[in-house]
Structure formats: structure tokens, C-alpha cells
Length: 388
Image 1 (spheres, rainbow, N blue to C red):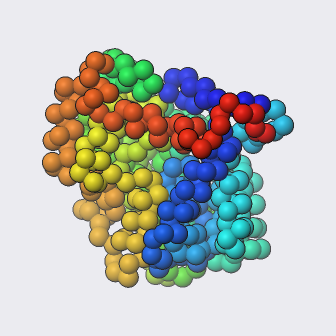
Image 2: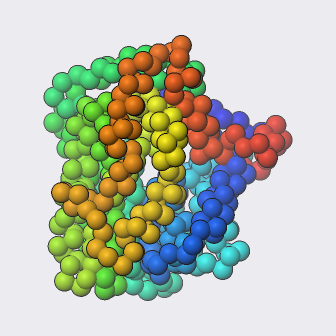
């Protein structure tokens, strides 16, 4: 079939297998050109098929030579049905790793479920032995609580009062206001259940119980803080409440792992174009302007570059990692520089549908979003039929 991008409400419903494979190839080639890093020998990446999770997997495997097991919940392809971008990314990674002689395995299923945990533990015992790194990188709309059988759904809403802000349709460049009503107490609890640290803790406890965490093992999860412009819908909203729970969980796990020399950490990463960030109101407009400012200053990093810096400068550089007052790694340090945020704020105040293409990098946002789904690559003939 001929596969073209179909985008609805800032969500891409299709993915191109050739383009996705080339994106993973480019990440691997970029990593191969850099110096090797000290790092893990056996790593589990929970949420490994896109964004920061995929970046962490490539960094672990190709910068450190680690055997990796990746878990993702993606829609597979069939003879006449297109799979998700994450499905194609995962297949491509396994293919390249096999060609390069790097041990790699993947499981496709619900990481929140007990069945997936059991299957993962069995695979680790069979192929890898005790892990020295566990990366938790889950962004999910819902979670079935294994203890109660209750299905919880996450929401992107403010807390306490309605939120009105400007956002952008990154395809058309139209800037328009959006108002979101505040979350109920139940919606807040549900979002914490899905996006907080409870499932991360269950994973670490299961690995410890089965003796599958090596002495000195590290585990890291990802968070975001962001600027005042997005605070009401992000850090001060339902997602932010979940991130606070995630960060509190990290402190608890860190104490639990300390007796055997282990650590649990949260890395606060920079704002980037991902499937998740594209649908959060106000965030696409902020990212488009942020990209303009950071690229002009030579400060911009991709998901992969952030993960390579995380491994090389924080997790495995031989010293205790530098942490902020809340005990977090701050990979968003370049984004949050005063001069960067001052310029971003100035441009956001000026931004309009008429000047957005000029004063922001909305074109770069658009290009990166398409690339994440395998589209927009000059070497791919998108008019040709391809086996999905």
C-alpha cells in the first residue's frame, strides 16, 4: 500500500516502516561516531520504542555496549494494516542490533500488567542475568491497577481553576486560545495512578524479589518541569501532580537500594517534540519558540543527545551525579537558562498566526513530528507502495 501521513488533532495515525527504520539507523550512526561511554552491561528499558526511552536504549547499547531488553505497547502491523511508529522503531532496533552483534530482546505488551512483568522476569533470567540499569519511560493514557482491577485514565488538565492559554496548530501555524476546565479530585487521583511512580516501584520490587537487580544497580525515570508559560497545564496540573509522585517514589526507592550500593534517580529533561508533547495545549507553541532560541545559541539537543549526556555526565562518569535541591538530575539546565527563557518569553508575547513561521521554529517542529512517524525523509519515495 501507499502510506501517507494522516494527522488529526496533532496526532499522527499512520507511520512509514522505511522512514522509521532510517530514523533508528541515524540514531545508531550518530552514537557510533561518538566516544564510548562507561555504562551498564545489562539494561531494561520500560517504554523503549519512542522518545526518551528509545534514546536511552540506543545510548545503552551503542555507547556502552549493553545488552538491552525493551518493553513497549505498540500496535503491530499486518499484511494490510499499518503498525505504529513505535512498533517499526522497535523492529528496526532489533534488526540493527543483530547485525552489529549487540544482544537485544523486546516484548510488546502492557507494562502495567502482571503478565508482562512475569514474562519480562523470565526473559531476564534466561538471557541477561541481573540488571545494572532500569530505565522507566512510560507515557500512557490508562492503567489497569493489578491490585484492584480498576481501570484508571489520565487527563491533561489544570487543577483548581480553568486554564486559558494560546496554543498552535503546528500544521497550519494558526495560533488560537484554548480553555480547559479544572480536573476533579478523581481525575487527579487517576492521573497519579497512571503517570506517577507506583508502577515504577512495582517493577523494582519484582526485580529485587527475584534477585534480578545487580549490586550497585541504577534506575532512572524521566520528568519535566518547564516554564511559567506551561505551568498551569503541566507542572501545576494533573501531569505535574503525577510527576511529583514519581519524584517522591524516586527518593523512596533510592533509600531502598542504597544498602547494596544502588540508586534511584529522576532526570528532569528538556522540552522536545514527542507524540505526547504534541497534544498538550500551549506546549507546541512553547516548543516551537524554544527550538528557535536554543538552536540559535547552539544549545538544542535531541532525545538521544540528552540521553548520551545523562549517561556520560551524570550516571556513569565516576562521581556522584550533580543533583538539585530536590535530588533530581537537571538535563533541562540549558532550556532553563535565564537568557534562554527571557528570549522565549519575549517571542511568545509577540507570536501570532501571521508571524509564527518567522519568529519560531514551527517548521522544525513540523519536520521533527513527521520524522518521528517515518515521514519527511528525502531518500524515501512516499508515492511508492510498501509492505506495511
